[in-house]
Length: 264
Image (tube, one colour):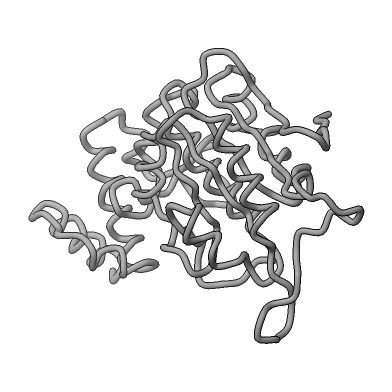
């Protein structure tokens, strides 16, 4: 059971860490869940990462611990105030080594993708700012934020889910985190394509067999089949991915074969 002191940041994990995360959030308990399960949880237990959460409410001076106010110019909703968020960011950044940028999770940011996850994984750490309400005071972005990142073209109630997604995507790329380091290199989007289909035992399920090539022991044939499936799936489901790639002659041949097989 995670506990979250009100007067100071909560730090999970210690020892010889490779990657440091600090999240500024009004809901530290929500952020804490990402460290309780799966890949991130194991990375924390093995001291490969640290995770700290700083609550802006702990940097207020009024009895109500106010972190928001009405926007100048009118309009619906509230805006997160400069002072408590700035103080929380400075405290969070002070816990991390040099070279850790402040990333604001915002619908106005660049869309998060695998290339960005790879870039982040080579940093000593990240300070992730999870906004709420209508957003944060623009002057805070100007003075404290290094980069704005979005999960996609839709609206969430806050940046916590986006922050957790970034943490999960980055942590699994760190050396020693996954049981097999090749797992991360074979995921969807790593080569700019969707992943190929996967199968496990039994060989026949609901009258459908595992493709024969996967049972053949022919490693070159299996690799060729997987590449063909990745190209074909990307063409059918995410043609925008293929448009970004300059296919080799071999890849084009595999794609043509896939499409021909689908027409038969």
